[in-house]
Length: 122
Ligand SMILES: [Zn+2]
Ligand SMILES: [Zn+2]
Image (tube, rainbow, N blue to C red; front, side, top):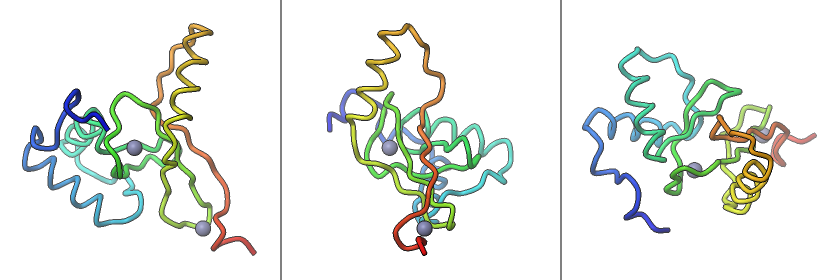
């Protein structure tokens, strides 16, 4: 992981680090019932690739890796388990290649896969 080319955690303000810690300890996406100031800080964390926004849940999760300018894919269990981030840079690569080939401008940064995890399957 080439972390020197992108924003580092130490560039975060104490508030932003705090939010990151809260998200990390929550162990599941945090629904955005947060004040407007938190939104700004969350946006910054998203910019740094430390936190991802899951559009379909309107929630935020910490990134276990350091994701910067890449698409992130999430497996979202409808049984209400923690969201799992797919650790597969190939997904981001092929989607970027596809969108470049079609001159399709990607606006989202996440890919949400909905389903049922093994633990919740009947
Ligand atoms: Zn990530
Ligand atoms: Zn599940």
